[in-house]
Image (cartoon, rainbow over all chains, first blue to last red; front, side):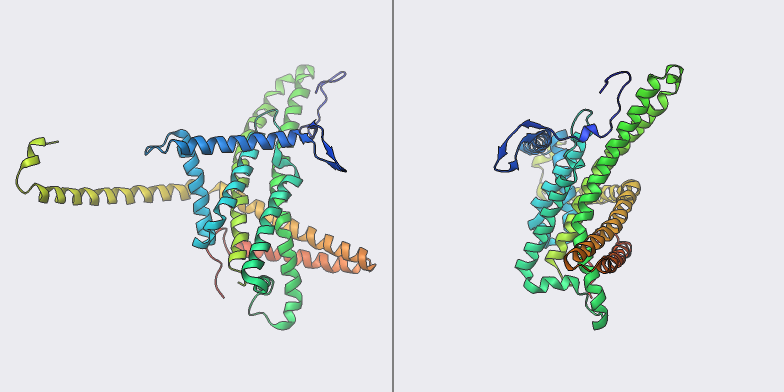
Length: 254
Length: 118
């Protein structure tokens, strides 16, 4: 980071995607990037925790086993309370999404790592998976009845002219808000951390002012704690909203 | 444990009785711990985490609906060449949809079972 005279502070640098193994097929850039690397790492962490955690099957669970079981039960509970017993078939999808988001966020909090979920294209792809599942399952299961989602019952005919476009816009906005929230939270949190770290560096380099350096340091510590909360929270919100949207596919026409 | 009792007459009866009382005691204990666990979960977890989650949801739902409305209108205008009428119309619809989303969120708390049947 340091170049020339003083430390150069560039809070955006951490989000740069650069190819590790360049690969071009046709006009497509299919390089293996640092983003792909960290997705693999996240996947590895999740698979390791779940495999080792569930391999022991001890009656009195150890740390790893209770962690795996708690995460699973937590998501199962959420699924059941939002979708009822019909929602069980979506449990694998919701659980995979939750684990991937949670561990992307947590791995990203380790200094020097890359946060996969801080890129909107990644979070949008996850949201697109959810919304496509809702659309395909809803139409396959309920046919045209699925579009009753956009027509609330008990509304007078003339008002429908207004209500239907509103409901359609509100439906289209779902994947946008789902992906934007996760991406914006991760991006903002990491930029804030880097900015305060920058203050620390600047104060340290500013002669007598370094006496003030503990202030941004304290802020970084507090922000890091907050980021841990946000990391868990955003993964949870993502899972809950996935459940709520999938519930629309299961029971449309409310 | 009194091993001498093992061969005493009426052993089965006593054992059954003892099992029953133990089961009852255990059930009572279990319920108690579950209740306290639930209560503590409500007071600690239900606080700042839930509130922040709802806050983020409200903000993003409002913003996303307005964004989608604006983009839809803008795109339709580009296709139809009716600058700026569809943009205005859909922006308005988007704002209404955003507030409608927030209203629905506030009227039905997050993740509270099935939506009410109509």
